[in-house]
Image (tube, rainbow, N blue to C red; front, side):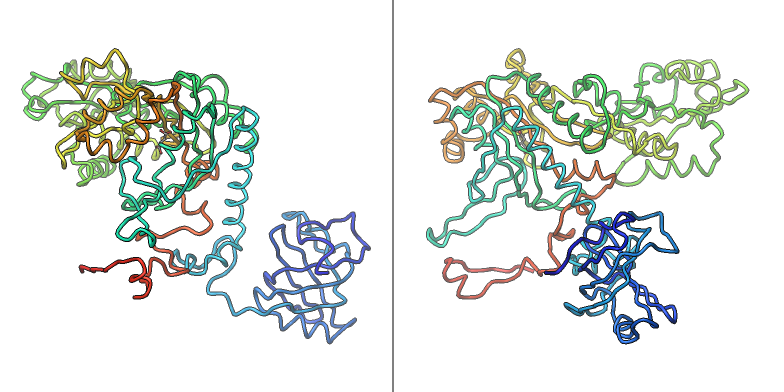
Length: 584
Ligand code: ASP
């Protein structure tokens, strides 16, 4: 037997009891006659006391314990004289009568504390030590609780959890596939699923009606802080549903999670905002609606007044920051630099200060008199004390820059309260997206997404205007998930592939199985997938999904702990009929 209790369990009720604990040495303090050791496990920390007077041998033994030694201690629960109200076990300590070292530890390469001295790389190399830290462990505990609540909610709603294969054929989610060579089929490869998309649709054809899976997906993309080559989705599909049925089901799941995991009630229905509106009001298809400061187009108001910069561009628009008219030259310059960074592509920024005394002062006074600036102020509903920031250029680029500027001002003014959660649905995305590189249209979501019937005619005249029956869930500016009502008719699916520039043969080769299935009574269906890692990160209040994954990869897609990817032996290559050509 190793323990009678865990290290987070004992309190005043246990005083006088004989107990046995096992755990790791968090730290030890030697105070002459007494040695104190903090013993830690997943559940908490309990203080052990060794007394020189009662047992000097034992005390000597305790003095030699190093950080992260694994020990077993037997003794009596006593009330502490020096209580620690910060922890549940802080009123007691164990007077140790017997101590056993179960395993020693090298000195860990960084401190196992909340604020560790370990850098990212070191922590990843010794991730098993990093995972001993309370903050990291708590993220994974949160993840586990959320997964359990998701399973509870969806199975109560009649969803069936079905596993789909990992060795499959390419799925078109728009990223590169990871591939796996087949030993038994020389020269042939499996692809790892970018999502279970086609399988969940086949489950609908099979009559499963409501499917879900908490599932690993793989995408070979360049990585950023919120991306991992393998990540987890809450993947779902439903039959005989319209868009709003799917949204209602997943609004229910979202509210359930907020309620059970965070104790937060999200009142009312989530707003449904068309993509075009999200773009014109927020410059972004994942708007953060925790605060206003919406974008207003100003072209009509400002053009034709002799200011060449505004006259020559496609779009002029701005935002109004409340109570910022007092911004200094330096602050305004910093904002101008912000929008002029290469990734924003703006040439400059125009500002208007609506001073407290009611006067207006702008960086373009030469072209716009006070009366004209009053009209600008009226457009934004600006009041004395406010600051209007204006950008101009190509429409899409400028809206994107305004969106970034709005978020930056939101941060500066602390309008993005991390304790407030504002979900919304963004709906009616464009079906197609023009790709400059390949000079053809791509499916913005994926090629199984159903277009609006009334937009079908536009395919011939203005394909970019065709709207999709697609939707995203956005919370606080983070895209949590997306899905669509699917095409369930073979002819339309073939036409869609045709519109996307697939030849008949390509479409047949890649997705013939799905189109065949549609010939055997495919029900109308639709679904959605939430990014589970992102949802957990949002609930944990952290930016990077890496911190909610037990063993994540770094930005180069490497696991520096197990040192992978790595080369394989000649024998393995031969067995797989592979020749490796490394081009450096
Ligand atoms: N398979 C889609 C994705 O991974 C989600 C969906 O359409 O259900 O984004």
